[in-house]
Image 1 (cartoon, rainbow, N blue to C red):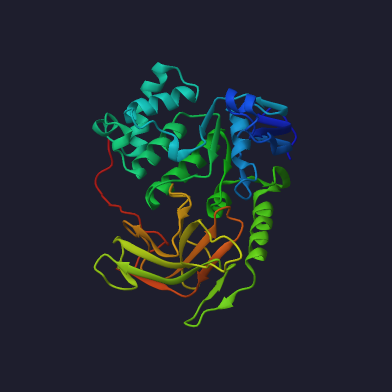
Image 2 (cartoon, rainbow, N blue to C red; image 1 turned 30 degrees about the vertical axis):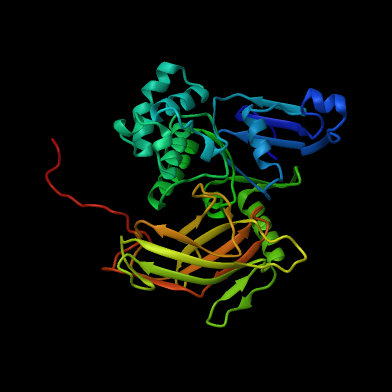
Length: 407
């Protein structure tokens, strides 16, 4: 890792973290001896990490590998069992985005509380309320309502805005780097880029590789609580993704075209796309698109059936490799989905502002720890975006105007 220096805003040296699990939880259990024996669980081991101003450090690794604990230690929410943590910056954190708001309080109260926790005094926090509401796309009347009345998307937008718009020196993000629909996700990513250019340091744990590849300057791969690899983001992320591919096995052809890979513990039995007018495999530019994933869970009687899994959908232009849309249930705030023996998961894109043309719709269902795909299908389902030709892969809503120059 980069050696500590004057520009370091976070420096961890030899950090370890252990928890005590089990043992007596009451006086009765203590005196009757009915409690099980306490066990010490080691989560982090001898972690060195330095984050400097103006850089984004991505943290990858399987769930349970220590990523969330690392961010909690970095943010001061829990003390290390060994080692040192030095911070020289105001910290703003998104350490549990789905639970980052209090339902009984108004959106405004939640936003002000988050800003105070990020290091602002109450007057400064209240002064930022307008900017938070504007970023989250929530008006004053909505901010006055209790958060329990908000949709999941509104909660997520408020949580991200409250953490990011406070101009932190160090931003910590656990799992969800960009939230909401495609337009708001782009807004989140652009804002993180702006923070980095201003000199903010960002430490982010995420499974969403396109986001990390776009933003991260360095990356750390945690495996079983230790730093397995660290260095330039492209090198570390490539190595991490290669390890996932190796576990997924070789590609296998599909009977109707395309390929799949995965361990087969959950299989996608069908992938379908429908536009707002009910047209199969076609959507007007700017229209809504529903992607339906039917799945079946394997049960061989030898291993427990998969209880929860992540779903993902990406779109890329036919003939190109880079995805222009890449969404997962985790990145959208839903997390891993509880599975039935057979079921259906549906993704609805409220508006698809892509340039007209043909796109591959690739889909996957992934293990709860993201270490292996159960089933990933690509080059098998197409959707046609209809409309007048345009330049560029994305066609956001826009207007042109012309007139005399002011003054």
